[in-house]
Image 1 (cartoon, rainbow, N blue to C red):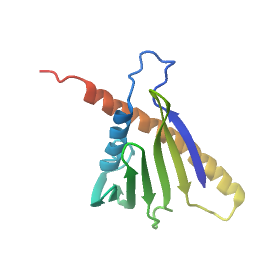
Image 2 (spheres, helix red, strand yellow):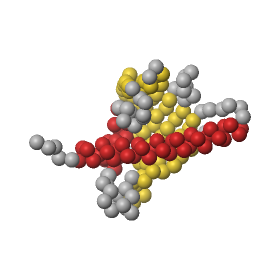
Image 3 (cartoon, one colour):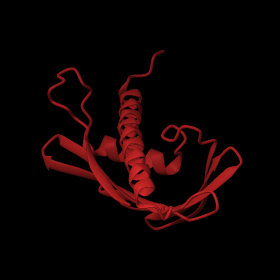
Image 4 (cartoon, rainbow, N blue to C red):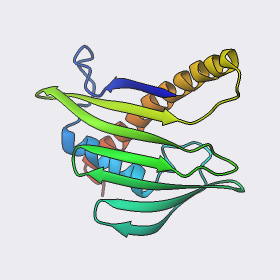
Length: 159
């Protein structure tokens, strides 16, 4: 299943909204790469197994279930998460890219390639719609976590 959508970062219709710049959005995406726990409910551990130039390999532990993925990225532009198929996960790819059609107008584009097939077209269509809705909700939450991280980092320390 292929699915993609945009999530707006700076909605100018909300005047009091804390505005994020591209660097803050990128920092949030890299936080998701380094420690995905705030972004993935139920994630108990995010362990980096190997690092390379623009890549890393991780093990994500949800209770007793471990999921392995490979992350690659182009600094300031996009992140690609490629999940290895296993008995607990069908595998797939998520690419998150930053889009800035005009100054301060920031969006994240989420592109999914998910593997599943029950062999029944109607069941696959219903399941696909369920996944689309779940992905959209999770991606909106991702932007909220990035916003929270940026706002926290922007606050002056209290003494």
